[in-house]
Length: 484
Image 1: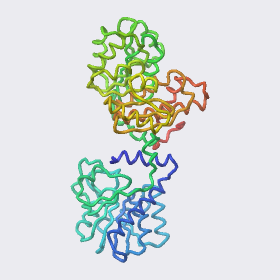
Image 2: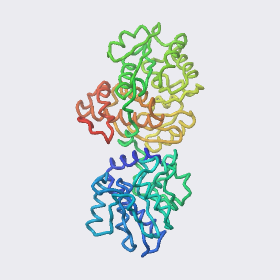
Image 3: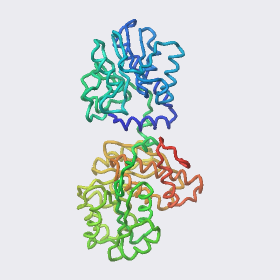
């Protein structure tokens, strides 16, 4: 089942795999035409009501496959206002080939005639809410006719995600939707058929640039609205928590704080003036420090636990006790991972082991990526938490949904790249679903490595990834100079 955002992600990932959107539209239009042929006999009258977006474009394609019908295309609005190049090309093709096409510039003048079947292709999965003109009048004309109504993807006015449907939505008798059904169609009293349109399985299996479309920022947002992250780390090591904290900032978090032992706090602060450092007395995290850490954690969206903590027995005991009492979301990395299998917690954990750490946790691995994905999914289900297992192909699974990521390169075997990933996870899981955040973090971290290796070769270092993370996270619909 695909939400409206899932559809946009899938379309962009498919295009990144080399299947152009124009080809998908051709397949979708052919599927609409097949549905028409199943519902109406050749020679009967068909009225196609098309919007100016890609949903309308699907129906414009369909018109070319309906030469044995008395078909008329009603475009809602001026052709000059068609919103996408591929939809406009299909309109131009109909005009050039002398099909019966009409621009409806005044909704009151819309006349469908007396069709046997009406194709509703006004609004697709990207639009919801009450129908406005000219769609409102067109929907009313459809309901007033005796024609069978076939809607494309979802009936216009029906929220594809199953939220509030428009009171004046199209009442469809049949729906032809693409690739997979949509949540909102569960409440539609119509015959729904799902048609494949040539989207490769890899577009769903592998994380791609389309997944970046899940990111967005409210123009009216304030400091803290886009994530506050607390990194709990340091002691034996200072670079690891500094990398995680800086990566969280570069991945979009508004505020990032590090809590660490007082013995290393000044050194850690020296890595960057952007870091907000809080400390507790001592050389490493112990159970005596937990009240301080818990109090700090309460004011944050996400805790990143593990970078640079070390594996002293009292530190691992503290990590276990902390996880058992925290709520909310925690990214668990490095030495802290080994306590996860034994801990009982109400927190939502995102664990980021490499394959060696996965084995220490009790999980299994394999050389074949597909087999490894199955093993990770089974172990994630057993743990009840989300896993991001690092490797040449990263595997992300929450026990039900499993994705693979293939960005990245051998230069990223340098120390610290996992700390950058943990920080990126911390930022993204503050604003996204845990599985989506983990998938996107893996993609962005690997993509940053791919950008860095072009400049530094296999001499790249972890701070190079931090610096290029913002470029690696440019959305496909953003036009920003210097983007990858």
